Length: 310
Figure (cartoon, rainbow, N blue to C red):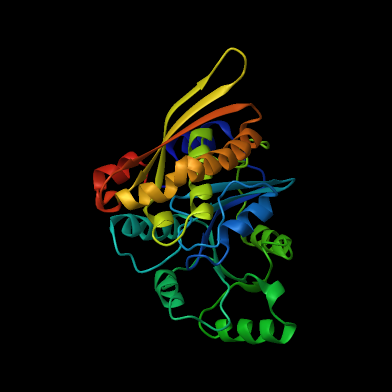
């Protein structure tokens, strides 16, 4: 369940519910690479989910918390819904399915010119649910007003959406309307998280995701999908320096060579870019050590997937 036992106890034992405060959980779903994470980062006005132009960037359930004066929306960014080809893909799709069952509302994101065949899998997941589903056309800045109207009309005939919106997550245009409509639909409820919390993810997870983002942006072909990152050590020294040691898992020797690069230059570049972002995240100087290890076919190794948190 999305609401943990700890939150359940807080809700029923320690929280005072008021009629004027609204709260609830909202799933962001859609095909891979439609901009769900970009929209979430824009709404929160801070980057908590990695974003690239590659498909299947998001692998885990990412929680983003938007706290307003009279409400709190807990967004659940899910992996892109696709036809899986390995155990990792199956786990990603299963995560999205489980989230849809648990939340109060759903935001279905697409960037399609017309309803795409891949969207059918999303509609199948939504079949039979009674909770509000909001349709969001992302990357609307690349389309004319007439095109936007046509696309919204086509999707409106496929499902009974609570509302249809067009936004640009990258330019943060129209995302405020998503928040407004969700606040109208959410039930009265408690404040699940403190005002200063924007995610439930630990810094170790965020650091691993940042390293993976830099791998994706600096490599091509099969390497981004075959790479995973695990933080092996996180130690803060007396002088404030944070020492982070990570291992990058790939499935083939060739992939390892690509990530390391000639004379180790590619790995150094990945590490340098990741270190800068991690320092911004934790507000401290960082020594980042990266090693690359081959773990053959790890995406179909269920024990390995559990170790990595998938």
